[in-house]
Length: 126
Image (cartoon, rainbow, N blue to C red):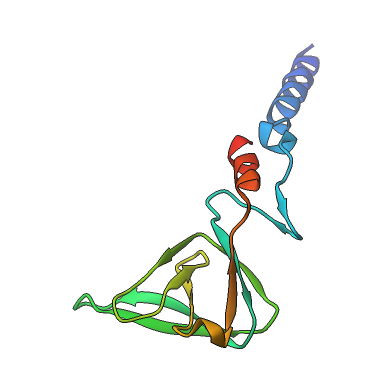
């Protein structure tokens, strides 16, 4: 009897915890990339471009620490934008990493795109 009750409790817990609403909600796809919560757009790298980590030193000055070079064809999700005085716009690609938009847009180092309002609505609905 004790083994039967343990089996019943185990099966109940297994079925209760494995079925979640997240598993049932469909993914919102934007071309071949899944749209994630908080995402406002994407950047496609067209020419070699550095990936930066923005750090603040002890005097409060923001430093751009290059992490690696992004290669043409790479696509990154954008979660925010910011402009630091004297610099071109920065695209937040998550994890404290940023890609800098060149001040001369016609040079075409990267392409920034935003999803349609319909896709954002689907994402926020789920």
